Length: 275
Ligand code: SAM
Image 1 (cartoon, rainbow, N blue to C red):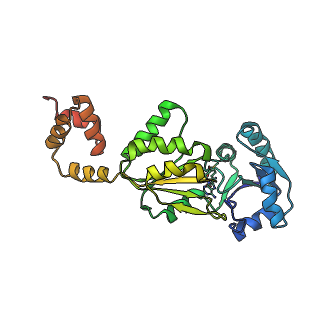
Image 2: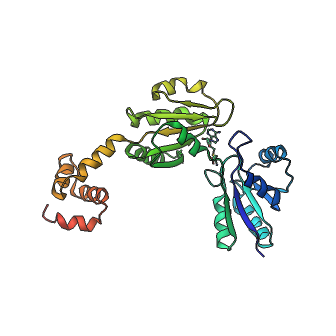
Image 3: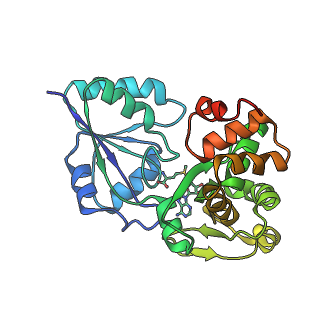
């Protein structure tokens, strides 16, 4: 019989943030695949759990996932854990999960802490619709694309960032945010947990004194929603004129109208053959 792969969420700081079910699974499985075995050992020792550990991280994900799949095929039940929080969320996991599914191995999530959700709910910023972008890319072109997405987003944005890159990220965000609110959540569930709700300039000025693990929650672009409401009221012809007046080409206008109205580009094009 095939083994099962459990995706087990572990604490993001406070060791007590683990579910009873997660502890039960960790006690029952045959093997734990851990991103950082030393980090996981701290958790296991705290709960007096003793299980074989195998390291599974970004740099050995490809090879180790094959080893783990073999073990699952032999009937071993495996728990996948990352350093902190939910595996697969900016942490290794996707590779083994994909291969497990390909091999018809059951994948079972064991819910628990995830840093971004806790940052979001305590931020005070709109939680109805949000986009999680993980870490901003370092590649210039990809980074610009993401910043552009943030600039235009009508949904709350969540970003992870490493402490030593935070200053640059805040400076890049300053260029596009205008007066949108931003919350820096740091050290969630730890002694120095803090939600900093300051102006972005103040954040930049003080960033040297802000330490620890950090997340940014950025308010949606409220103007975007207003523009959307306004465009929705226009006829197709008025919509076209609106973009024409701000200097877009016919091709750009058709693309934008199709996107705004959720229509096919050809469909829109047929309406403006004579333009
Ligand atoms: N898998 C994890 C999860 O479920 O949230 C995320 C892992 S990712 C490699 C690490 C990033 O998550 C950090 O750089 C930080 O942005 C965020 N993070 C993790 N723990 C945090 C905490 N206690 N407080 C604030 N941010 C945290």
